[in-house]
Length: 248
Image 1 (tube, rainbow, N blue to C red):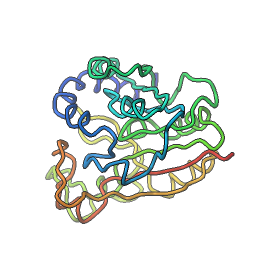
Image 2 (image 1 turned 30 degrees about the vertical axis):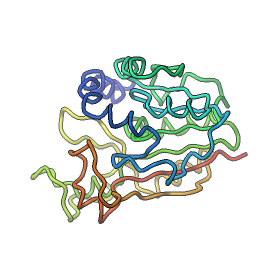
Image 3 (image 1 turned 120 degrees about the vertical axis):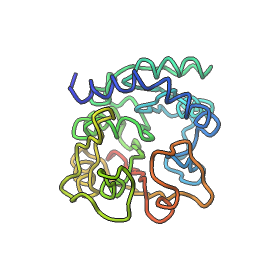
Image 4 (image 1 turned 90 degrees about the vertical axis):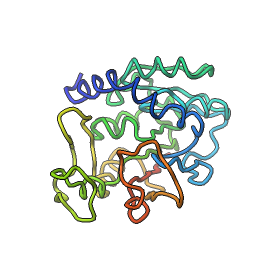
């Protein structure tokens, strides 16, 4: 296993109980919603109709998304690198969603197994996209959809590490993006500039349909209070959703 994947797996094994205690109920109450501000899929329309579709969630955590999509008629599967996160999924849901422990960099599925692959701040944040995107492209069927929500690069560029707070100024250069590690105890994150995403996606046979840059809705609240301040997220996008499709 890649050392970065091993590091993140250890983090989530240790942190999953606290994570689900803090966020699990909110995720279960509004499972079909994107990002820290829980913007409804009914508004975003990133996935579309999943009825009768084979759907894979990367970095599913307690599988709130996957379970809700099963209830909407999808043949949903959840994948997570953390065994403890998958235990929470079994405890929280009665939906018969298959749960797989694996890294998204090495997907244990046959080629062309899924119509839709997606993640919401999941594996595409914590795995090297140069390995994950080719793996996803392989398991997608021709015409299949990949939709993923990740942190916007602006969040990392404007983070004042010395003061440990979000700012309105740039504190990093654009070339600093890529493999990011903020502090010794946290996760290793992957943050790509838009141009790098475009080239990586297209080189793996994925055509871009949309890029949604998400700002916090008016009056929104979140359990992720350590992400970015609400006032900051009202002015600038803190998250982005890519919607791409495998060439037919």
